[in-house]
Length: 225
Image 1 (cartoon, rainbow, N blue to C red):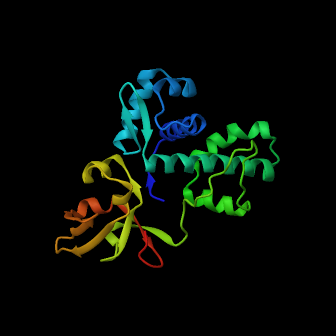
Image 2: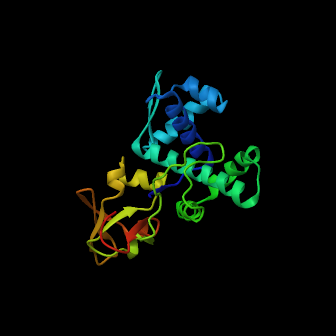
Image 3: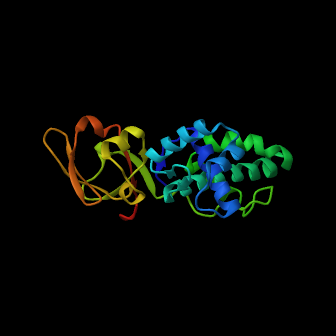
């Protein structure tokens, strides 16, 4: 899973939008619905939605509402999985009562990496439901056959995927999609340390000073990203 750096608030917004989307069976979630769900003022919500839109996690439509992108849905489902797996763990392994697990899981869900969530999920026997009867997302958000490296150390001519997409990274590369994140190839290293990189079919020179700030996933087996 590509890890877009998100704050706790950003994760909470994505989760809230997705929950309304599922509960009401609506593609576009209105600002009014988010005000009721999050109990924030409309200007505060609008400001956050525009921030998430810059990260390509949703589309904000004035006077209509918000539509999650595929990556926005994926991020929302990950945080839901994290929350519900922690609830299950607290109930089964630590003796919490069902009424007491939600608040604890709210704190834990944001601190857990995809790797930790998937390992905990498998340790618990891949439970289908949380203590409240809500379905735990079954998709895998971490592949044990990958490891994270700086693009400065990346091998040539191997497909890579951006590991962390910060606002600075997005600003450097411009508007990116999930497909773009997963289609990076280092073609050549130049004498000055810069590298020629192919990003979804477009080649450009990546300066040496920027490379240490950019991490990618490299798969242990095969080139599938």
